[in-house]
Image 1 (tube, helix red, strand yellow):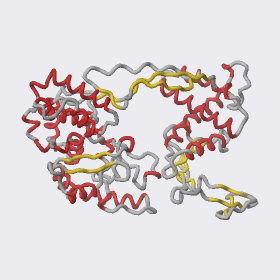
Image 2 (image 1 turned 45 degrees about the horizontal axis):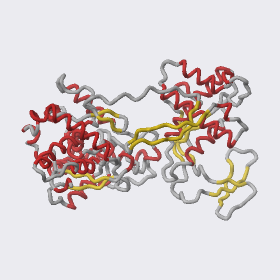
Image 3 (image 1 turned 90 degrees about the vertical axis):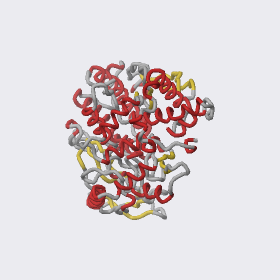
Image 4 (image 1 turned 180 degrees about the horizontal axis):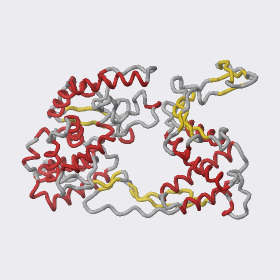
Length: 495
């Protein structure tokens, strides 16, 4: 099997390698026993030859291998067996059908940094005989990390957490180590204000951590979702946004990606993992009674969603027409053929996807912009694309908009904008009594796929604040709402 040297950090060169494929990584090997389901194998490079019996892993017939496996070497070039066993243990605890190695690779970098520090300081990473904590390797490393000005508090805690987890594994499987001498811990209780109210959590507090500053309050006029502060574009800002998109420097693909976000509320991983077959399915199924086209996304559909949740998206009729024209265009056809050719060249052992199972949006080189977890290449790729095009759209947009356009805009704001436009559309129904107060929360929650009602309520508070300030002069501005069905597919489907 081939081995690739990790290239991200020059300090790790020749010490951290990534093995593209580890075959039968979790099989059992026997020297003197011959289980009924075992296969005779030979230990490579052994002199004299050693004959073994290999019993393959049960229940993982097509996923016995591990891809892009991190592997650490010591200063003499010999395998660091404890660390490499730790990585296998980490991966073994994950889903046998996927077994991603990105977490193991991050932890490998953390452990190698620790090992390099020990070697530089002349420390034995297994020696915790020092009577004072300051004389033990983990405590020395913690102090060293604290003295580094470039390292954030979050990264420091991640590094020491990896080291503590590693020593726990070593103490359980390799060496007799007193974990109390590795780090001092105490049990604590934390009151967390979550989406379902206050929750009392019990956890372990290690001494080799630094207290992170409290999360700042959400800025006025913003809402926080999954750690990101965002807000909808006002109608005036959206009008400018749409006007800029009409410029000649924008491709039809860029316009379609942003339009899907505004009209469906879909996140980038959902938009960028749409396939040609999804468009065909909607067209063949036909529109709903209100003229919109429905699409189920999530696990099993080939379209990724946040946290792998099942969702239903509604596409306006005009957008389906534009997508159909785009999919049949020469522009799209060239990229589709390039994608299939590149796929076969890079992964000759995999079946080339059918044309209808090819991504709808592809780069000039025929690459996908976001690789679905259901993509057959996903287990083999070290760094799958995760939607860089949305950052490119943002930078391009900010160069062409006026100074009044918000400079902290991100692509995710378009999802919040979708919710705001929906809220504005529902207001007349609240005012005439055809929609009861509180029902608008349920409708918006369903269309934005919020798991908890409180998340939607936070958005509604934000939208209400927008109305008090700007709704009277901006509501249903003609330049925006002339789009009509071009921005919405509203009717009983919202219910």
